[in-house]
Image 1 (spheres, rainbow, N blue to C red):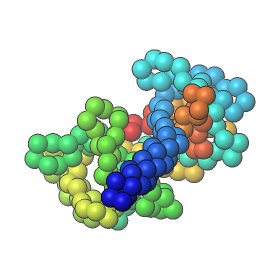
Image 2 (spheres, rainbow, N blue to C red):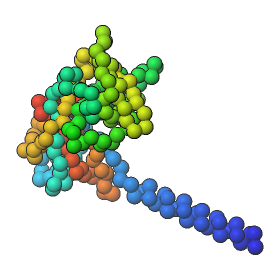
Image 3 (spheres, helix red, strand yellow):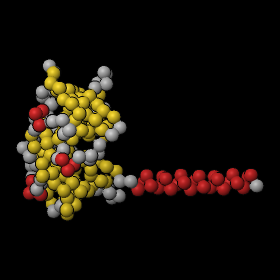
Image 4 (tube, rainbow, N blue to C red):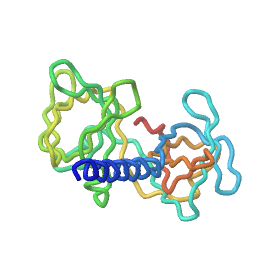
Length: 205
């Protein structure tokens, strides 16, 4: 009886493992694409990535277009919802590589602190500004998110951009873009439901 019971448990465990593996296998691979639009063929963009390779991404027919415009430290105010690409420092602070200011309606988007790929070992923190204090080496910003807070050092030379409503007409040859979530399809192609276009700037994140 115990042997039969053990076999049943093994079968159940194997079934759960198979189901879990299947769920993970169905999760689409997310790819970030940064670069300049080199070619447009209908909804398919050919983007010259920063490593020199050509990447093709098919935009959804109703793809959301947002612009990124130049901003300054003065535009970062208490309670601003911002994203900070940064490099962790030995003292626990985050040295900003780039900062982007979200539109108010984007508040809460991807909130938290997680790995990023703008540089090896970089992080991304999406959070609300609690305090900001000017210092000799730049601005020290404390940001808070639902699971904690981070101390960010923003140097005077750190690129800062802000989101603005965009238009499909801005998705054109020569535009500098970043696609945060391009999904790799079973056939290996990439598709995206949203694109961020630099309006006079190169998206720094």
